[in-house]
Every structure is written in C-alpha cells, then in structure tokens.
Image (spheres, rainbow, N blue to C red):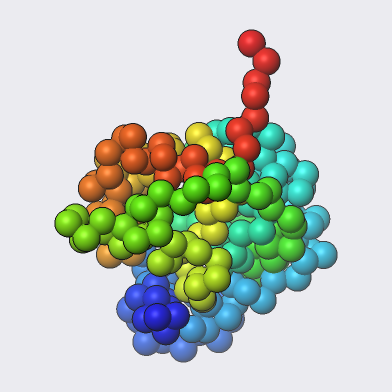
Length: 220
C-alpha cells in the first residue's frame, strides 16, 4: 500500500532535463521527480529557524498558530511544506500575503524552512472517536477513508499528502471547502477536489473536528 501511495503522489517531472542545481529546477503543476523530493527534504534546521522568523507573526513562534484560521506548520512533512511554498511563489496556489513572503526565497531556503517546522512539536488532535469516513470511507460514493492517506502510520514520501493531526479547526474546514468549490486546485490530478465535492458541509465539519487540535476559545 505504501508503494502505491508513493507512486500516486510522487510524480515525474514533465521535462526530462537533469536537475543540476536548485536554481535550475523546472517544475510544472508540482509533477515532481525523486531528485526534487530529495531537495525538499535536504533542509538545514538551524538555517530554517532564522529564515522562519518572518513566518512567526502568523504561524507562531514554533509553528503552532495562535488562532483557529491560520494553519500550524509544526510537525508537518517537509516535502509538503516545500510544495506549498513553491506553489505560492509560482501562483499555483494564490494568496497575496504568502506570495509576498516567499517570492524571494530560493528553493534551498524553502527546504531549510520546511526542515525547521518539521522538527517542531505539533499539537495533538482533539478528536477521539474516528468517523467512518476517516477509517473506512463510503463504498457507495467510492470514497476511501481519510486515514488511507493521512494516517501518519501509513504516510510515505511524496508532496501531496499533509499531516492533518493537530491542525487548526477553522483552517481545515475552510480548506476542504475550497477544494469542494474548486477555489483551491493545487492538488495533482484533482484528488482532493474530487473527494471534497462528494462531502456535505456537515461531513467536512465532522472530519475536521476529528483531526483538529483543541479549538482556541477567543474572548468575546
């Protein structure tokens, strides 16, 4: 199963050009080969800590966000964090604030930042009883269980599949909603878009509540 998941989500670069340095990376819609994956996990934690200072105001000092709408990055797979920064930089995933933050970063900078965040301790998920959509999915809708890909025990390499446990509740709900509506489309082969379109808003909230960290109670 691990090899199957890896083969789905770690895809070949369209161009067969040999990558000799980070500056010569030629990527298209995140169809990436093994050498790009190797770069994404080659980061230096100490260098990443310095570079990540510009991220602290939103994502927290150690990658744990201080509000429910901003994603935490602590403990996230470096390959996934790297991919998101690349996608923001190349406007594959669109967000003006993130574009400004990453537009001048080198690919090695991205790898270093990703390494720093992976090394940080994430929050624990708050949910205890896993919904059937998480464990086994829904055969009638041809939906596999979320944990088939997102369970840390079965996750492998590749760029597409993030760690969800301990993520911020409102961010999870919003992100699944964006995939459902097609407002976010940086998932290769529309994997998450096709899945999210089959989910009701109630199901999205239920799944998000299971994976998310304990919500922050804001003062009125």
